[in-house]
Amino acid sequence: MAVALPAVVEELLSEMATAVKESARIPDEHLLSLKFIFGSSAIQALDLVDRQSITLISSPSGRHVYQVLGSSGKTYTCLASCHYCSCPAFAFSVLRKGDSLLCKHLLAIYLSQVMRTCQQLSVSDKQLTDLLLIEKKQEA
Amino acid sequence: MLRMAETLRRVLSGYSAVETREDTVEAGPPLLLLGAPGSGKTALLFAAALEAAGEGRGPVLFLTRRPLQSLPRSTGAALDPLRLQKIRFQYPPSTRELLRLLCSAHEAPGPAPSLLLLDGLEEYLAEDPGPQEAAYLAALLLDTVAYFSHRGGPNRDCGLIVALQTQEEGDSGEALQLALLQRYFPAQCWLRPDAPGPGECRMRACLEPSGLGPRTEWCVTFQLDGEMKITRWPTQAYDPSSVKSSSPGGQP
Image (cartoon, rainbow over all chains, first blue to last red; front, top):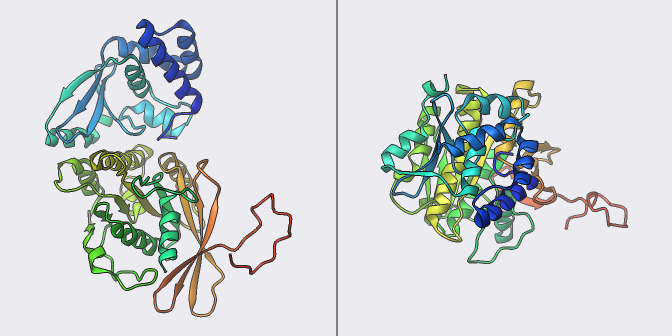
């Protein structure tokens, strides 16, 4: 489902958020659960969070979008309101094969929300339009 | 007649039997309206547009590739010009234009729409049939509506209904695409032809809110004069707690 996470994942993220508020780190048991559910994407996503790779971009209109700097140096665009990422893994593993819930970039966004750590960037309304109009060449 | 319009709104807004208070109107989940050519999707979309326009919560945005040949007659009264005024028609001629329209929705001034309707999704998808392109368009539709809801303020959600033409015998490619779209549109309403009476065309509308409520069915009848009537599908078969055996022909 691209509009909601499975209940078990929502619960895990919620527990993580509570734990982070108290101790500023994710408890090992949550990390284990994360790995269990997401496999290797979990480690990669945590790495992206550590490297401050996620940016929340907003404009005066209040609309926003995410960008994630991938490990390869490429920047991917992710929508804020439902699951969409411009990376090839999303198209392949999530959409085509259906064996992944999220790509590592989308997972990294959820984790950065839990950890409350995310770069912020303000752009103009016009610039936000261009960012949302994810150009084809990025997907090549 | 008012009951009919209310019924339609509930059908297409996907909130089935949930009662809503006047001040808090939930739009319901995004809904995918599916049916073969001529099954009444455009007429239902337009009826939903009129209903939402009458609620006075904000303009209605109706997107379609070509201007409607004729305004479909709706339930009951003649088309109210005040309502029509609140429906904004836009005709993006290509997928690119549609994407641009959605991506720049936050640049447009004025009040946020209360309902976004898109007719003919299949035409826009045909240009770029890959899964990533289909997902991108579906996701953008959701994102645009999320933004409208945000701008509308508290208690002012924006609804989304998208009509997609399906074939009687779809191929596996179409089935894959539909499965993908269902990820973004958890609620679907299927329009299937039913045995018609004399001089009328009847459709059976099955609303499947996917885990958000039970499946409900409706009968949509298009009469000779173009008028559309909606009634609950007369069935007792779905109620497991019912002790009496069902007798056909009963109307609630």
